[in-house]
Every structure is written in C-alpha cells, then in structure tokens.
Length: 396
Image 1 (spheres, helix red, strand yellow):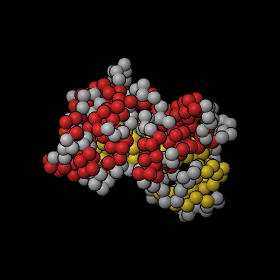
Image 2 (cartoon, rainbow, N blue to C red):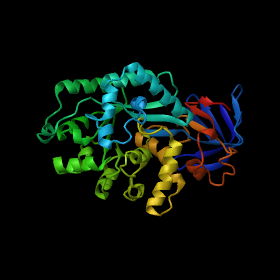
Image 3 (cartoon, rainbow, N blue to C red):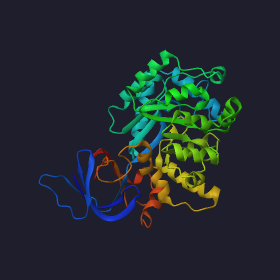
Image 4 (cartoon, helix red, strand yellow):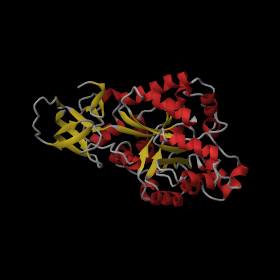
C-alpha cells in the first residue's frame, strides 16, 4: 500500500513533515520519502488534507472492570480499587465471565474508535482472567499487551516475616506467564520482599503500581520503614504505574532503574488522589507514558487524557509545557517503555496510525499540529484508524 501526499508526525520526536509518501508492506511501515513511485498492482491512497499520526498507546488499563462504570463514586480509592477488599474486586468475583467479556468488547471498540491501537492491561483473575481477556479481544484488530497476576495477597504478618511464595503459587504464576506478555503486580504493600524478588526473576515484562495513593505510601512506611517505590523496585520492574505521590528521591531511583513511568492523571483526579508531577518526573530524567487506568473510573480516551494532563499541569506549576511532550507520552514514549515497535511512524515500525482530518471544524486552521491534536482533536476528527497496515475503523 502506498499513502501519497500525507502530512505526518515522523519518528520518535514526532517531527512534522508537511508532505511525504509512506509505503506499507505487510504489517509495517517500509519506506517514508517524498515522490515514491507506485509498484504495479499496489494500492494507492491520496492522503491530501490529512495528517497521519502514530496510533495511541494506552499504556495502562484495567478493562476487566468495564461492567462497573461509575459505581461507588463517593468512596475512597482504597474502598474502590483495593485488590483484596475493594468494591471492584468483589464485582469481578461475582460477575459471570460472559458478562465481563461483553463489556470488555465495548471498551475495545471504544478504544479503536478513539485511535488507540495498542493497550497494556493489568489483568486480574489469574490464569482464567488472562484467558478470558485474550479470547475476548481475539476478534478485534487492536494490539494488546496483557500483564497477568496470581490472585495471591499476603497479610501484614507474612510481609513482616518475609514469607516466601508458596510452590503452588509459583506453578500458577508459570502457567499465567506462558499465556500472556508479563506480570502486572497490584503493589508492593501486598507482598513480602521475598515474593517481590521472586517475581523479579520472571523473564517477560514486569510492571507494578506504586505511590498511587497517600494511604499506600503511609502504609509502606509504617509496615516496612521503606517507601512504597523502594519496595516496588525489588521487582526490578520495566515500568512503574502512577507515582502520583512519589518523592524526588523515588523519582531519581525510578529514572535509574526502570524504562519509565506510566501516569494516569484523570483516574488519579477522579479518585481525589491528586495529579502526577510530570515536571518533576521530567527533571529527574524519567521517560513517561499515559494510561487511562480502570474503565470503572475513567473512559479509555487518550484525547481527553492528553488535554487534561497538559492543561492541569500548566495550571498547577504556572509554567508552559510543550504539547509535543504530552503527545510523545501517548505515542513514542510508550513504545520505548514497552520496548515494542509501536507508537512511531518510522521504517520497520508496525503500521499503526490515525488519519486526522486537517479540515475538521475543531482543528482548522491547524497552525500547531501537536497542540491541535493534544487539546482540540477528538474522535470526530478521525477519518480512519489503521492497525498493522489495515484499516480497523473508518475509511479513506
């Protein structure tokens, strides 16, 4: 396939190129250059009037709770999402798999329509939960990164006594990891140092929630004398999620010991937990991506996520932030953190992209493409979404 006369955001730095051509072969971008000649029999599409941007990477989701939208809005974060006694865990345990699957499908459709071409999901429910999610999304073109977990949480006594992971749970974890992309740990406060270190030996993606709530930070200090992030790093995680209440010291450690941080600003705000300090994260050398988190709490819409994060961060710090920085968090930075050929328009990257109508009423005239996409664009400006070289939504 040859895309002609396109404006694009090119490479990891999202360089704006006014007019160029893109050749797609199989599932990947193969050549990006002006005046490419079409090959015999090659499909050719005129993309005049469009700006092609990388597909959004929603770097942290929980779509299993799509059935529980806006339940218990007045409850605390601990009451709503705690993995042991939270309202969410009770709903998931008491809902039939077929019902969960139906609403997970809705979330997948919503993500594709909004330009999300990859999502990374922390999947609850052990092996059954992983298999249910994989079966549910198998009929959708969206790219998924499924991070499973053993439904096993230790009590305070077991944590302080540094109890090891039982053999039966080790066997269960091995079965889960055979069927997914890695491990998504609920948090350090539910495990002993021994268990976290055992998890650190797994060979696939390792991710963990950290410093999401004030209460979780207080609990860690009280129980172990260490910050929640210090203990989370025992997992040797490739990425940390949230870090809303992380100290500067913890952020410096994160920059040295992980690929990056995934922030979930609207979910944190909806839980009345504050806003991640992306300015301090940048200063301490962290690479950052964006996730929309629990569908129970938040819609999986990266346009709204970027717009919110950009404006509220500038309002809090009274300091300008380049819109391109926010857009990178939703695209190329996520590809870097997840170590996948996603989130960028470049040779040999997966051909996942969004075709934005430059003449959409909310965008025209588009003087600053990065800013326009971050705080003006919405689903209505999307002409089509491509995943793996095929149109997954809309038409050209």
